[in-house]
Image (tube, rainbow, N blue to C red; front, side, top):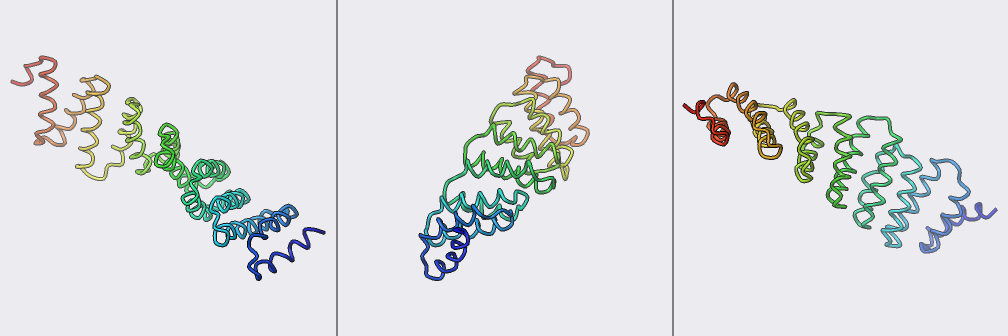
Length: 239
């Protein structure tokens, strides 16, 4: 059998340093190997040959992709897959395989970590901000207290001008505010969104009035209310 001879050639070629001959030999062995575990071991070896000995990060990356697909829940393989995506520039294929794995992984912690990674790559590497936002929104659907996802969604909704959705993210941020200063900052941003982007002074005023109860000496809150009164020619509250 050809695969039997090929299996015997693998250690021989490795010992001789005949690295350029090994990929074809691995392909023969892989074609005859059925178990996922054994295939993954072979694919990881093949990726190493391409990376370390043949200096071909592109082929190393795609061999590693095949290894990940053999065990889609093995998130311990993801850091090396990312490194190979970095050196080979295969970001599109990287997020594609991560999306495949996240659909097959029921662990919520793993799912969140992978979704965050996909969102970050779409944003930072592929400049695909709408796609990026969809993955951060999926994280928030799983864990609406995830600060990384909430902060990313705030920035992306602002960039995309999705003001109604931005208001919903601010509401979630308020629920996890650690202290008065953080809460105040979020309320200021929320009120400004209602006032400046959605054109609803009534909602903004209600927020500023709520803030006066918690921060009665904050001159910025008083100033913001005064600006609304002046804009609407409501002079009585100013007296």
